Image 1 (cartoon, rainbow, N blue to C red):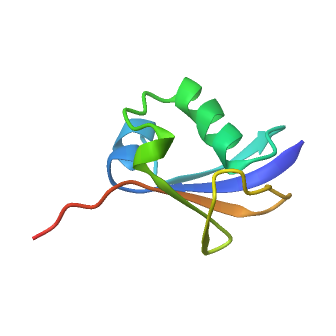
Image 2 (cartoon, rainbow, N blue to C red; image 1 turned 60 degrees about the vertical axis):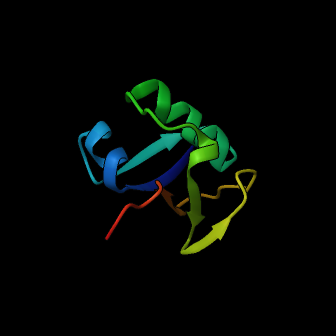
Length: 80
């Protein structure tokens, strides 16, 4: 099992009902982690609509996760 710290922003925060959590998972990539979380929460955005950052750096969805890493899922931002 790997411990991952996850942060949610904007619509993902609303849909998860929290801004952050620490989870235990066996997933090995950012993509697999998001897919696992999308089964737990009613996320309306697919991976193609998001960016992902691991340990404060934008990365590809196939980025390998290690114990204790921080993952942030970033939805599109609207502003004015």
